[in-house]
Length: 346
Image 1 (spheres, rainbow, N blue to C red):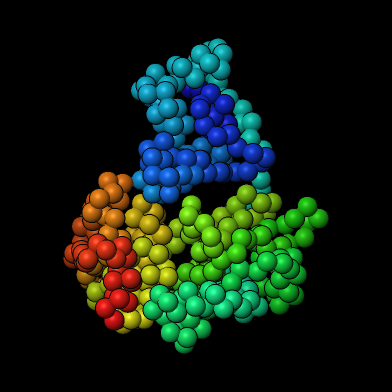
Image 2 (image 1 turned 90 degrees about the vertical axis):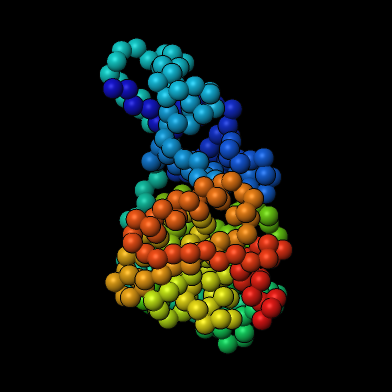
């Protein structure tokens, strides 16, 4: 059986090639790149040999990517790759050309929570970011309680050293890695807001970034998956509010915090409607704590975006299979997000 890797087929495709020794990178999605806003959204993982666009849900493996670009079946794709790579024989493994960077396995949530809390305590929130959050409907007290912070622009290694001196774990905590001098450091980030993403118990699982002055991939995870001894972030869910028998599902942790603050309702956020990898395990835990009903509150581009509609159907199917009662809230589509709609009429 011939085994192919992403690094084997990428030079054969009309697609952006990876730079350096990255374990993954982003390219324009061939399915939804007509919308310029989402160019560069599809991730190609060179270690796991998979690809996925979180916006439209297009995903698969090596043969799927090749067959899509070549517009042929998977069987035809395999034959075409063999021919173009000049492979003889029926049993052969094509050696990986991409250097693999050593990564740490993910630390448990208690370790991550302790490290992230200490990190956030060393940072502050810039006045323009505070104004942005206030304009979204959060109060000064809520902003302080949620621990939003502005990304640091200098001192990444110093911050890491301070955390180490406090006895905190950096290995297995997304965002930290070892630099060329074998010293722990924090990844350099563009300016933006750091958003704590909390689990059901209120522990910080990870940090999301809302970048300033960008229209492409404005929200990103703090991650060090492409760095030596780094660690990748997962697509974690975020719970805002006390656990009740009914919860709302919304896209994005800031929106969840805003809706919870303005209404008092319990809100669970997902990274996006096509990013549901952590949702089921969270719902299982919430069901054990008494949650019985879910109301989805997806952005109103649900009404016109076929990729969002596809993800929405997957979400409803998941809720149905889990035995949860569910429904959907809709509102004036002039306000794309439920947070904007509620804040306008608050």
